[in-house]
Image 1 (cartoon, rainbow, N blue to C red):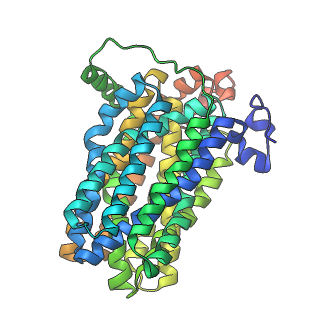
Image 2 (image 1 turned 120 degrees about the horizontal axis):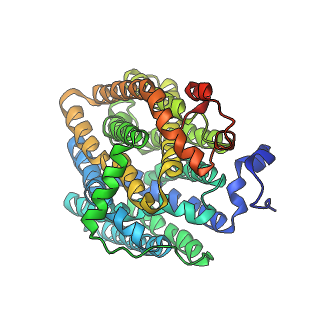
Length: 447
């Protein structure tokens, strides 16, 4: 059904090019399990936000719940990266996915038995965030174990991003329908059951023994080594800084969606479902586009454009009072942020040294997810003081500024990245010496 893994991307076309990572059986299993599990995750996320707002009608408490679920990623993810570089990513994922399933089932039970209050929600969200602090960088680094370091890796990252964000279309839509007729407990139960699919997929994989060199160093020494490595290398540092800025100022708009649904558009849970689902349309389009690309050529300028498109879309959404325009703006916001984040992931994965992959991807997770709790608190506080529209508009403006600044740095970042790509043979025309020095400053020769 799938082509020989030895085929190069340039030999494929059409649909076969877009799904070339499916040539690897383990990636097929992983993709299928994630498709089911992530729908459940989005169902729970929307149901939890709606439950909190219905219980409290407080923008600040919405932000606080988001903070509780995301702060562990800021606190623990960097240490988790050291653990990931030392241990089996496969075994780690089986454990974290099982713990996530138990957390969802406990949330469903407490909701059904009417033992749920805001502080219980905060505690359970903090538990979920602690699990995610290990799970998310493990999943990012695990893609290499599924498809190897070759030309299928960018495609696997793009397809994984497509899965994450296309589930955002179905999950919130299902949650919006369920919340009209049934208890949120059913939403939490469905999420718990959805983990069975990804756990079964992980257990069905056939993987070679993990190639992990035992380390005699202390964890904090290895952590500092990874941080110094990332900070001293310009392309990695610039990407992580832009990801952190967008996560802090822009991505937190999602925690304010219940306020837009009720106060701006005068709707209920079904309107919240639409607002949360429609960014997935743009995100899915971005995932398909990125999956169709044959290499990392041109990724740098697209990272900058993605951040700017995301910021402009948030500005339009914040000022719109017409539902069709708002939905269009959210779809473009989904396209922009996925383009930026997925390509940032791809460039990092192709640049990083193998023995530091877990630590660098943990820093990426900390920048992406770990800054989100501060963004949630900031967005909630600004919305409480000035209103949700102004809070979203300020975040969009910051994303635009960050994207422009990143674009201005591209010439120097490109020069720093090209030796790595030559060494790894990721860009064959450059690795073979066919990229003339005069070509290295053109936009087509960038990370």
